[in-house]
Image (cartoon, rainbow, N blue to C red):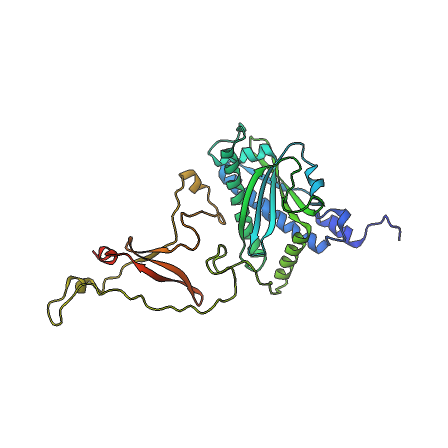
Length: 351
């Protein structure tokens, strides 16, 4: 057979619309099929988030994915783009990058700030932070969808950063310039606004691993354990593992007696209300958001709280703070172990 004829894998890749055909030995037709689902997932999440922000009709279309070196990818841009970087929490912190045309990132930022996007604002840290928040919502939504394609594997964006590209920028900054990456472009068209592109970038080896996870899930094969995941789907509250940890020693909290009722005398005021149910709430933390930020929340969005990881949680009865505690896991349920009692807190809650 002449060398210039297409192989079966090349023909399948062409028909599926995936892959860079110079690398068909590295991306099979089966891998291309799964990675097309990844590309569609990000396109759908971008459509959903931007549609909600813009309040206008949004069309997203996936271009042809390519495999190239980071240096080759950087050469595609005539101006420095906006770089959004995160990692797959729950999947060995594999890196992911979204690369956006600079004007597109500013348009997204203006929409996040409540503008109409018609006039592209001047670049500033405020707008870059707004663009990062918008793309964080996209990634959170996409990770939720990808989780469903991996048998419910819990995925959370972690180690998120963003910046305007500098000279010799790379989509995945911790990877060398000659590292091969899989890049999938999505063209975003908003009614009345200039279109822009958002590129989803993974290292080629990570892209192939993700394709394998998705294929195994589709075939009903068990997923490998997630080395940096935990029952809460993010953070470090359970030690960063999915498997069961050491047994938790849970004991009833020892409260001081409420009131000093006498034996045989008239019931004390506490005795009269002892059987009334009250609502016990455990508060992990708080956050203050504007109305526009609340309206911009989507499934998968991350809300940063005012407490550091590991700080005690607040225990409230009928909205009154009575104690502090730490979160524990009892079998498959969450619980809270009381670490200290607020003086007079229980009495205020009961009154």
